[in-house]
Length: 162
Image (cartoon, rainbow, N blue to C red; front, side, top):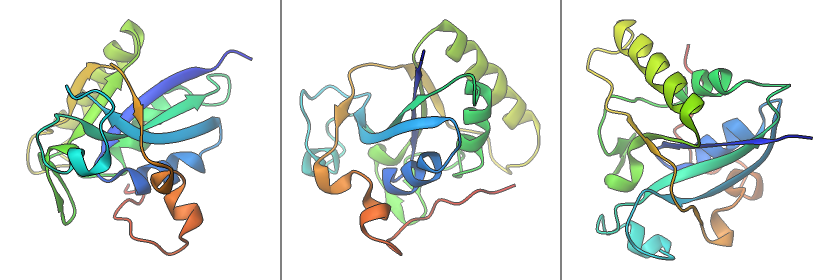
C-alpha cells in the first residue's frame, strides 16, 4: 500500500488532529512541531515564540481513498486562515496557519487552492496561510498525542465550517 504524507498547521493541534483522525482515508495522525530552528523542541519552548515552530498535524493517507486536494478542503474548513498567529483564544507564532508541502505536486495544489479560497470572498480579510516546504518534524510529547481521544470533551476550537 503506497501511503502519502501531509502536514498542516491550523492553530492548536489537538482539534485539527481529531478532525483528520476521523477522516476516511487518513491512516495515521501525529501532532508535533515544524518550521522552526530549534532542534528537538519541547512544548514549553514552542510557547515562547522564539523557536519559530508551528504546531502541526502530520498525516499518513491513502491517496486511493482521499486526495490531497480533499485534505486541503478539510484544512480550509477547520480554522480561520486570516488571523495571523492566532487560533480562537490562542495567540503566538506556533498557532499560525501553514501548509507544509512534501513535494512539488502538493505545493502547486496548495498554491492553486489558496488562490481560490482568497478569491472566494468567504473571508473578509486576506488569507495569511504560509505555504512552505516541509522540513524536520518533531513529534510532540506523548500527552499531546490523540489528546481529544484521551480527554473526551476536552478543549478544541476546530470544527468543520461550510
